Length: 141
Image (cartoon, rainbow, N blue to C red; front, side, top):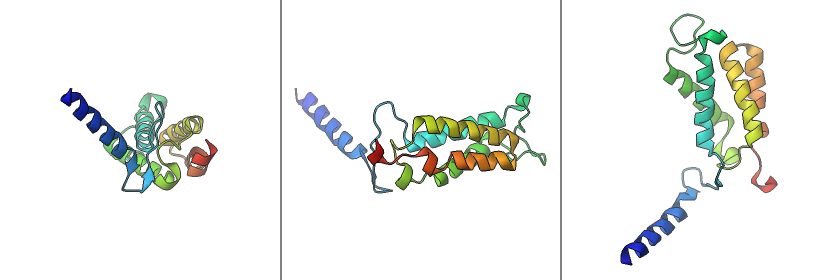
């Protein structure tokens, strides 16, 4: 019985502390089934870099030649994650604020930009992936 009480108390404390993000002073209000901002950043960087590596589709792939921006997958994922974090500041795109359907459009644009490395694809990706397009105001939910 005492073990159950301690387990319940520990769970209550953890649930209470997991809900806040002290670093950005925003509430972490991810509902079940929603992806967090951090998970979306990881997801888009992995998707874009998987596409970048697809040489059969005409994408550059990893290496050190002049037409290859990234030497390794880690370099690519770090760069795309940094870009996504800049595009989606926690204050505008906190957990639970990334619109699923708009994110999907953004991810497709990011994959196209990763493969083509063209200026127009990059501009289109920046537009589709902006916080204004991808993130929603919690008041709108």
